[in-house]
Image 1: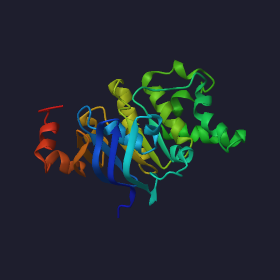
Image 2 (image 1 turned 90 degrees about the horizontal axis):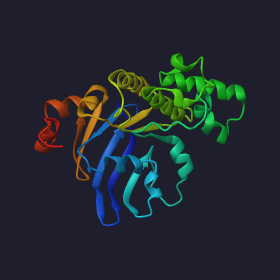
Image 3 (image 1 turned 135 degrees about the horizontal axis):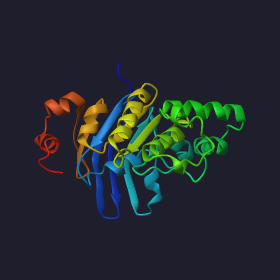
Image 4 (image 1 turned 180 degrees about the vertical axis):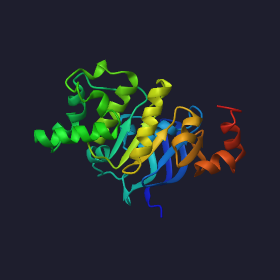
Length: 252
């Protein structure tokens, strides 16, 4: 039986006078991959950033409505944003390795937090790199600069950096958009394995990627949720003509 991990209720988001998300309601189950698809300006990145309050960094942003994670409303004034961002980690479209070694990239957040024991940090780094399916490629060069890695390796390193903090939810904003097919396949394989432990929400770089890895798909258009359903239903029997048109490439 599916367990609801995230419940979004009547979410509205504004950038000054721009209505970016419109009365959005969406439930996301634990241990599944939810793909958010839609053309440009559909509000997908805004929705992702709303889930860990990254939108707070924009002074022109305003939010209305509720987002519950494990039954706790994160859209309250006294929410612990630092803890929220640990629980809900985000990987961006362009890999963002820190200008330090591979090991230090993954251990950086641990050293800032409560984990100080070198042995524990080392074990956590290895575990995270293994989970991100990059350990075998970097285990003999952990002390080399992260910038020496390929684009696909850098993206998996960024995923490992998030995993080291032991989040509950992973957000990915088009993480494979600039990668070659082999690197993309490696990341997709990693995500399918990771859903056993995490809830994953991804803005895929293509409809086809959503079809390959997602359990459920939500189609957004101009800030509105048009349709949400199981992967097979969205692709074989979409209920809304706009969904059908988008999937078949008639617009977007």
